[in-house]
Length: 328
View 1 (cartoon, rainbow, N blue to C red):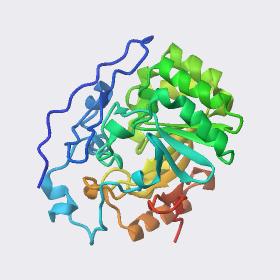
View 2 (view 1 turned 180 degrees about the horizontal axis):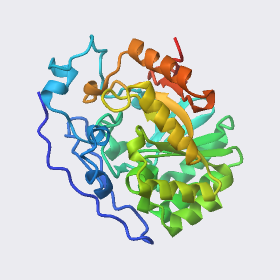
View 3 (view 1 turned 30 degrees about the horizontal axis):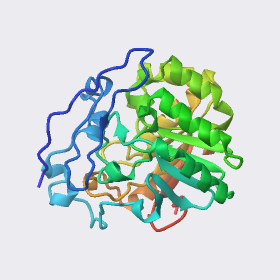
View 4 (view 1 turned 90 degrees about the vertical axis):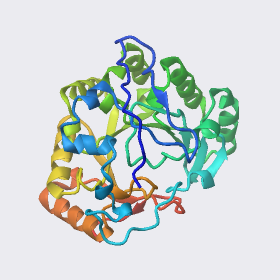
């Protein structure tokens, strides 16, 4: 049954020097509706199906979980916690799934709500990292010197105010073992004005430790405003990566993926991961069977240079690594 959704709200654009993206929170509990949420930039491009499908729920007939016309082969068991985040929580907002790195739920906010979000049921109310816990975080890092990388996630960490992000980056830089800070963000491709003077200064200050991982799924998302932001980031000499999700009806063809990789590379962004869909409840209509995904991936590998082919991976939840699917 299709969920009744409220009309999509707009996110007010920031002024160039404002301190935060003024985001709205994710729903805090599993049974809370995951409302539509758009920025003006995205709302203005909803006529493009590859963009609209990522942010607007389909009709029931297009959802394989309802048995409609677009039903695919047997679906796997979709879950509320598709990547087992809660299993690996070591403290509020700190996830330790991997040997050498931890992930911080740095913010409960996003500028948009992607309909395939694997954390759309996550309990952000009780499991978002609190900056008051920075001493606990630094103690944990000191007790675990094998941790040399911290991933800032969420939500979207760039929805933090600049002064909040500065406190977090300062604490991580002070660690004697942390060598890399990875920021995973969708924000600059949906709200590029977030790249204000304060954020530019922060990214420049901590540049030697930073990797910025973008989340762009289709070439149509590389709008002129987004390209301008990426040019600015490239001027800071930041290491820029992109990860995509293979989504039915959005980018499930070798030609679409090749066009995206080539466009990203031209902007100084390296294709990093092509994630198979995290099997989270509510995202069934994006599912691409593994056999189809591997054929698409083989076609991609045969059509372009190796450095433009991102790793095809799955987060299986129970693994303490990304499972590389590859060519099969």
